[in-house]
Length: 338
Ligand SMILES: NC(=O)c1ccc[n+]([C@@H]2O[C@H](COP(=O)([O-])OP(=O)(O)OC[C@H]3O[C@@H](n4cnc5c(N)ncnc54)[C@H](OP(=O)(O)O)[C@@H]3O)[C@@H](O)[C@H]2O)c1
Image (cartoon, rainbow, N blue to C red; front, side, top):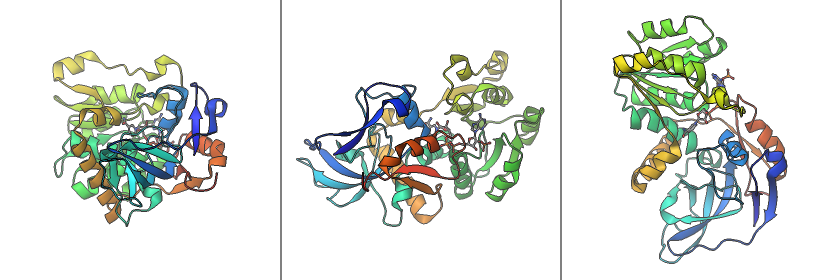
């Protein structure tokens, strides 16, 4: 089989290569999956560069999710049957033609979900679901504050707000996005380039956010933490303000301690792979199935995929590295011609 492999961490253009490897055989309880499509997430580039929260032992293949077709069952496995379309849960190394993993980590894809959507059905949609419905347990009419509301995760959160009935206060860094997000159902949108955005946020949330999520970190995340209402909880799940930067200080998020102490507020990290490792498999499979059902019904919609041939890997990487990738999602056509 063909596989993208890196033997050392570094710039993708320097360390990522295409290799011919023997087809892996499924052991007892395992399944071999023929990969069709695998997205190129900024997180994949973090893994290649050696800066992600979960680093595979080297040599390794990148790829933190994919859609594929069951090809061969190991002993003791009866389902999913060969030919079934599946996504792979908690498997790192999907940028290869054939992947072997435990049968329990496969989730069957409903017929109505396209390959393009299935390939990107886990990382962002499951994060959006878990942060809002799973962790914050947002009730009907309750208010969630989110940063980088125009991001893929931010737009998924807006769709969930509509289907689950919670309301949103959204923070963006460009005024031009305010109207766009309003059309997507955003209740309130504020711009962090306004000098008094923190005051506007406290007013809009009647005393500060009680439930918030942040994927910007840095000064925006720190200011959001300082505005939290008494007992408020902020889940930090990304650090867009530090992307591509290697300087440690770019990752710092200075929190004003007295506000936390006197108000009993909480600032916590949230990471999908940590959640997967600490959650019973049946529970995480259930969440993925729920998300796939929402994609099937149209309640959740993902950015259009732009398919790249494996030979166009450099362009796919440049696309994922581009910063504002909300218009499309680069996806490697692993099932096509190499
Ligand atoms: N913890 C987890 O398990 C987990 C899971 C999924 C995603 N994430 C993280 O969530 C974040 C969002 O992912 P995504 O795929 O949704 O991203 P994305 O679609 O690529 O996000 C692009 C958006 O982010 C905005 N943005 C970029 N840098 C910014 C900054 N410094 N300040 C404010 N806004 C900024 C852009 O605004 P403009 O339009 O103005 O450029 C654009 O709207 C990433 O950090 C990702 O790593 C974490």
